[in-house]
Length: 116
Length: 109
Image (cartoon, rainbow over all chains, first blue to last red; front, side, top):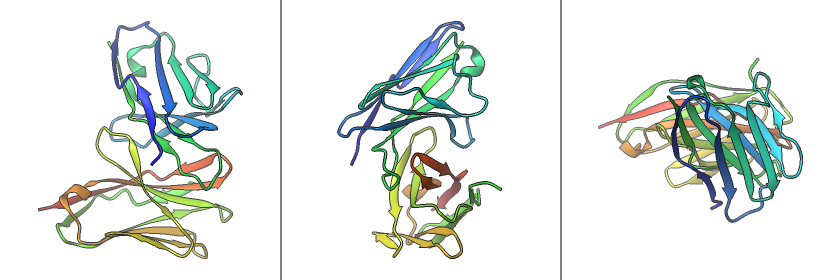
């Protein structure tokens, strides 16, 4: 099956640090990538959708200047949490899709971010 | 009204039992449907796509009812390892995927 790699899997940083998370599709071209956040015992929350070569579309309430998304190639998207604070601590998960609606999303392993 | 609705459960069933989950969707033009499972503190993993004619994969059977706008997942002969949260996902069009909140299943020895 399709493989999506996410790195790093766990980050612990001091408050004020910027953290970059990478999401790679290893065996298919990901026209579209999605970034989610999930707090303990809660549902996945879509943060933004990015298409290769264009600006990401952010969901309401998600600060685009806080969560910088770059999708420069068909196999790589990055999420940078700028000047992270303890309330940004969460489980961040990316997913990738070939872009056609009948194709499922394939998720990365997730990144557990802890800001001290 | 939410795009996709699921009963959050929890469903607690004994080993060997048959359990079924339903998921309703609001957009009648929805194109594609999927079931994922998510284990605690892990990412969602695709369990199966749901096809119009219904489909089966081992102990798992997925069905789609377009008239009533719901999809279902049936798990037969439940195993302890089936304990997880089951998410239904509906694709309305293009890149618009809508997730249910998930149904929690615990299989008890």
